[in-house]
Amino acid sequence: MQYSIERNNQTFGPYELSVIQSYVNEGKILLQDKVVSNNGENISVRDVLKRNNLKYKIKSGTVFSQIQSFGLNLLLPKDSISYKTLKQDSKLLIISLVGLAPAFLIRITGATVFTFYVIALYFSLIWGLFFFSVFKTNQVSIKKTVSIFFTVQIVIFFSVFILDINQFNPFYKLIDEGNSFVNQVVGFIFGVGIFEDLVKLLPV
Image 1 (cartoon, one colour):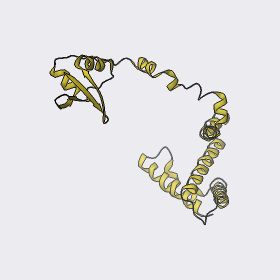
Image 2: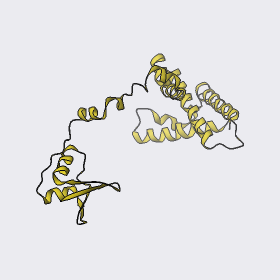
Image 3: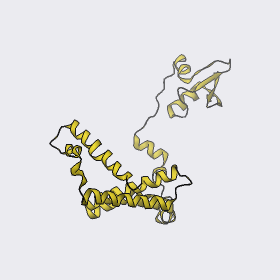
Image 4: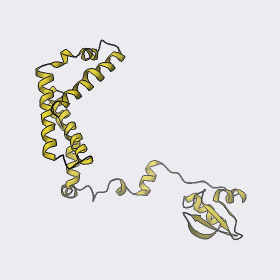
């Protein structure tokens, strides 16, 4: 008796049982594939093999053998990652520069206060441009967005680092390492988060 194999609404075969057994061992036919016999019966390949006492041993192989069967070019496409191709891909270069800029900055300058502030400006600028792009309105221009961004940064820098207005905020003292975890959470929320966001509203 011969059987046809159905997968994804496509029919293959018909095949003899020995051929199906061989294809299962090679991984060409799956055990969950449907089998349609000449008499119209519709069951799985596993059930057909079990009914006819046919054993199978699927070749799983190692990870390296599977990668080799795919071809190394799938994982390392030499033509796509050549210097000439990367040089011509302006979008990839821009994304790489934007994404790796903080890492290069830390590598060059180290973990300094200047590095921290520049990275803070970096992410603030990216988020600002993101919200400008997603929630863009006719009343807001890119020039106004950039001007408000830098005005906010100047106000925050002057207020926090020059005037040291954090000393007037009782919650700010709770962020010290000597305090409990709950006190630190309260300090970071009300002493840092909400306090700085209120300062950011001043230029706006």
